[in-house]
Image (tube, rainbow, N blue to C red; front, side, top):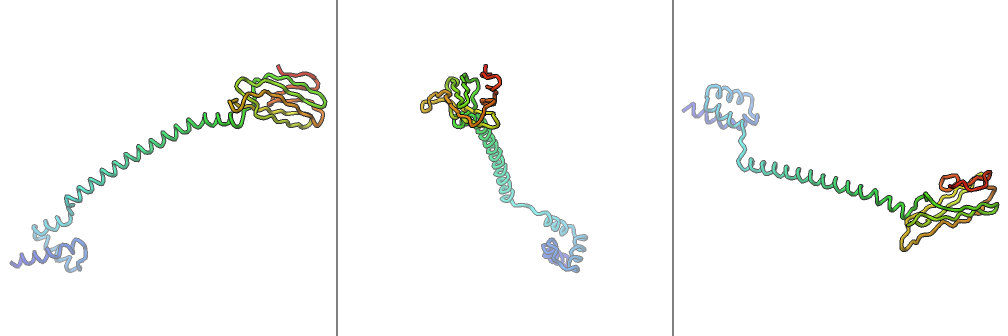
Length: 195
């Protein structure tokens, strides 16, 4: 009877023993008892291994499935975003080139023209390539060199084809004329250098 009573008292102390809130004397009494009593030692060992209830195990499994599903969704979302960005970039490059050509113009290449140079004016007349029109022409005169930039853009129903027909009145004595970066005329030669 004394042993059962002692076991009952010791078992009442197990929760506090596991939580480590007993006094030193109580800890010593519990440890002496479990060395001698296998039944109490087994109960204490079982208390130290917390068993999760079935609901907690099922909840953890459900959460793991949700997390894995969300990871898959995130991966797919990332893949879709990357594909959309790639397509957008691939479409943007030609669009930018087209917009630049249509709205900002491009330098004329392979233009057929006639140029006459006199002391009081430079006349440039020429045909732009088929399907294009002159957007603007600019003249820059510096130290006897005249730089001419002729920009064109694709023609359209609202912007019909227009050929080059420019007259420039020099401020000084022109020695050389460049059109779109190519040397076209030199005073010493006195004629067009264009092919």
